[in-house]
Length: 105
Image (cartoon, rainbow, N blue to C red; front, side, top):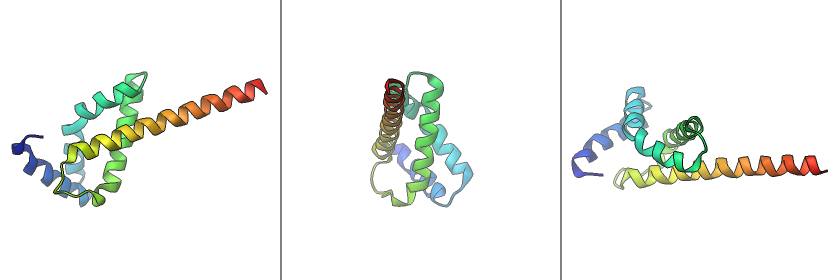
C-alpha cells in the first residue's frame, strides 16, 4: 500500500469500527478488485467468487475491532479472504464426499 493511501485507509477503518455504512461501502469498493482477483483463483465461477468476497468482507467488518491499525491492512484482508475461500472449498469437498458415500452405500 502506498504511503499516500494510508491516512485514507485508516480513516475508513476507523469509520468501519463505528459501523458507519458509508465507510464500509468505501472500504469494500476500494478493495473490491483486489479481493475479487484472489477469490477468482479459488472459485469456478465469477458469481461464486463474488459470494466468497462478500462473505470475507462480512468477516472483516465483524472482526475489525481486533485489527491493529498500526499494521498494514492489505495482508490482514488477504488472509481473511484466502481462509474464507479455503473453508468454503473444504465444505464443498466434504459435501461432495458425503454425497458420494451415500450413493455408494
